[in-house]
Image (cartoon, rainbow, N blue to C red; front, top):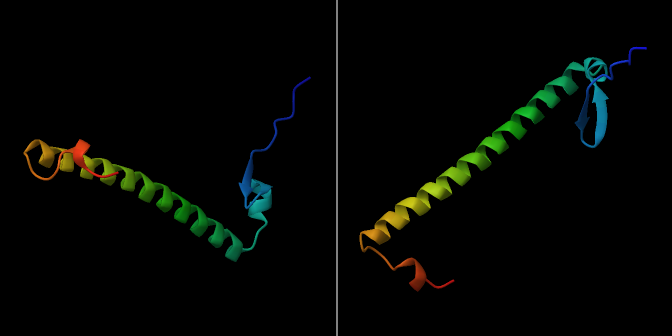
Length: 78
């Protein structure tokens, strides 16, 4: 006996929705879902970029310290 394939669900604000549920939403609701997902993606990219920038800043600051500029890492106040 073949198992019935379960339709994938998407969690939106704590509730599970199928693609059929989403297809039945108003055009305005679908647009809001698209904007929401785009904002989530932008926030994820911004967090990724922030980590890269913090790492890069530390690398350049370490490079400056190696050149004798500024205080050495172990002499800084915590």
